[in-house]
Image 1: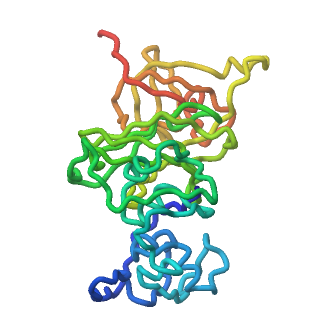
Image 2 (image 1 turned 180 degrees about the vertical axis):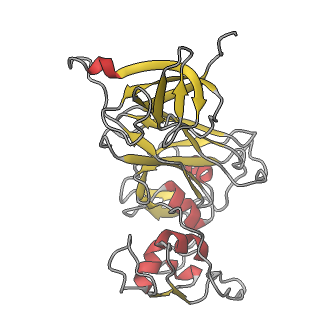
Image 3 (image 1 turned 90 degrees about the vertical axis):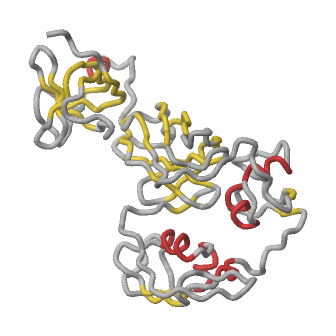
Length: 327
């Protein structure tokens, strides 16, 4: 299931808020909105609590969902206008194209774990179109679920560079303990697809071990996401896709290297200074490492890089803290 990523632009400043209308939920936005610089349809669906399909039906003038012109007037349907007809808490739902457990959980007001318990054996990442699943009347509490942890949820990925199929660790903090989150991947400011589902630990932490897609092209970037069953999506910083080393190609092994030294500030990129005085520019450094840290860097020598400083530029595949030598 592909979903739209939140861009790095500033949050949408939406003007008016509609008053409540009793039992019928409505959008918290005004019924009309003028597109501002940096706005995306994803932002509007999150801010106004409407489904993308409803927003597109209400605005047939949208010709490109990835590029909405500044100044365009958009009609914002009410929250219940997000479906052709209001969903009933019926006992069953027939899977339609685009349905995922997360979208169904949001639509029916239940959590993903409740859907899984009510439908043992279903394929979580590839729901069969036409399959009928049971919708529980309410979402039972998870055995170890707790209250949300104060603060904005975070996301971190390591390493920040790798070839197609390379392992990536996605982690985060301050998620609701016991809930299930979805791990996804996609190009920056574009669509993402699901890779895995993991349960939040009792301390609010999330960790998943996934991989850069085999279809990712060297020279491009991908981002990873953590998506909650309440519809929130945290987006990682970009991960550089580099070419995998071919051990059968002469000279290719010469590009692989491991260096140990201290991080210093460079002109364009961080610089690694080794104990014997050699220096290397580094691309793809994880932000958790700061100037002055003593680290071990594993990666490959870049053939071309804008960082050209020192003896070479190393495209970082893995960075770990190391014990500095005794003086």
